[in-house]
Length: 194
Image (cartoon, rainbow, N blue to C red):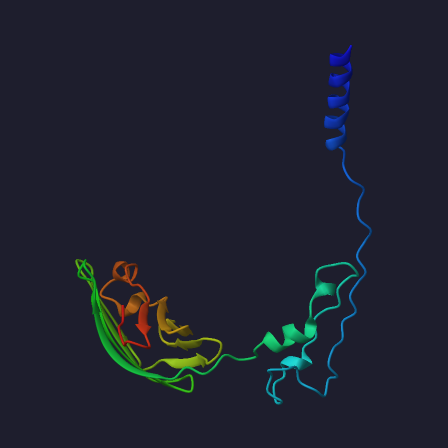
């Protein structure tokens, strides 16, 4: 009899531990205070237009309604800092892929860009600045050649400058050669390129 009562009580305890607790009451929405339009958010330049952009209002209880809009606005940057670099380097990897790059950019305006890439058993590619037109300055630089559509994109990420090429098969020994072209990476601190 005692064993049966013990089993019954253990079964009830086990069943009770599986029960779902009642749902908590809904959280009170936190009121958001925005700076007046005439003031800029902390950390922003007075001339910045980022404070003029408004986030869409969030539904009560949604994640967007709980965003600290003042802090978020302070973190938004309209434009990244301009790219400034003057560099010449050569690179070679263990497969024999090699090349050289000369680049000069002042205030995100390209003044010189010459890249020569040699791909073993496939030929070479030459990306000479002559004839390219700069079509973008921010957030990345974009150059386009009107005759063949070759596009060069340049951007900075941390201490690394990346120069990539697309639709530039005519600048190589053959269209097949361009399939082996990788972006050129330049380390702005130690000057190495890859």
